[in-house]
Image 1: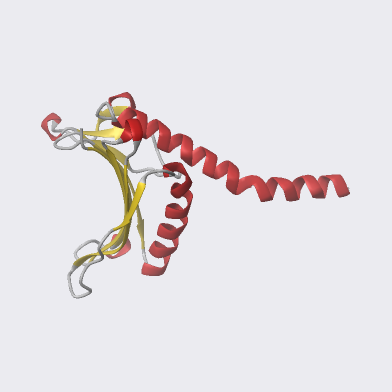
Image 2: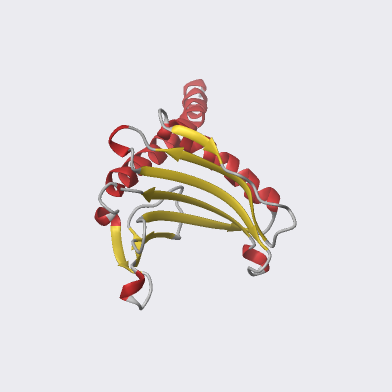
Length: 166
């Protein structure tokens, strides 16, 4: 019985490491695809208009259901989550930012400017990573924002975006 309890405890203790490893694998896959306009993870058109160059993504982060690739200007891969409260948003932002940090070790990390609280759309928190080495053309942005003009259940949004600036 003690062995089972010890094994269960060890599994629980290691689960964040396993989760971080999976996230880093996803980040590596997105980075590798990013230096080629995200073509290798591009799925079906996400709209009826082909000229939009908006596609579903075959890669996800943190199990997000809404990940898209936009190839119209600078190609970008983005996943988004919506929250009902600012507290939920900031908690998710902190958790996901902390989980992504080891995946982007060696990249230049910069805080993004937050917006004036009186604006109807505002960035509440943001972090950016400038690519390094073979990924020097890739930039990651993690943005927690609020938009008073969105539906009440989705006013608070977290987006994680990888952008190809080649």
